[in-house]
Length: 190
Image (cartoon, rainbow, N blue to C red):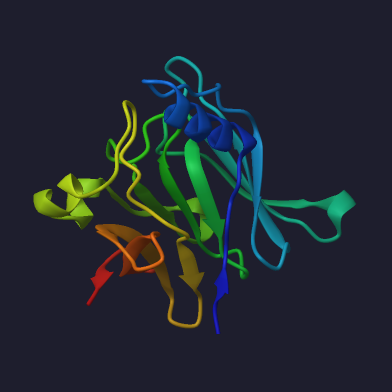
């Protein structure tokens, strides 16, 4: 069985709300964030980058909470900060999504980090979708809103991306299709 992971950032909700009201996107600066695994045993602490310094991520084992143990620390692929993060329940994989303020653009749309924080693979949206599929993705002035509620299927060893199809279902909500990427290799699984 797998668990669905969700990250919610008040600033992101605020930015999306503003995008619907204003003619252009508006993003608050990224802030330090902790992203927990569903079992809350591990978390990634992200410190946003500034200037030429990239964002920094530190993975901790959280229990016992007052004695959190650092497992690895590294500069992340994101210059500013990731827009979302999934942490595996076993603490062996971390997947970051998008760039803060530029969702769906750049080389860091999906980045997989393995044990010890090693970079497994990173993807631009163009690596995952065709030009026709990208054209169907909803967009705002700063972002291409390509994804839904991605999740880790740890039994299968994959991250499952929920990708907007450009179609609307009978309930009026966006329809999604799955793209599965193997965590260990970074290969897209058919």
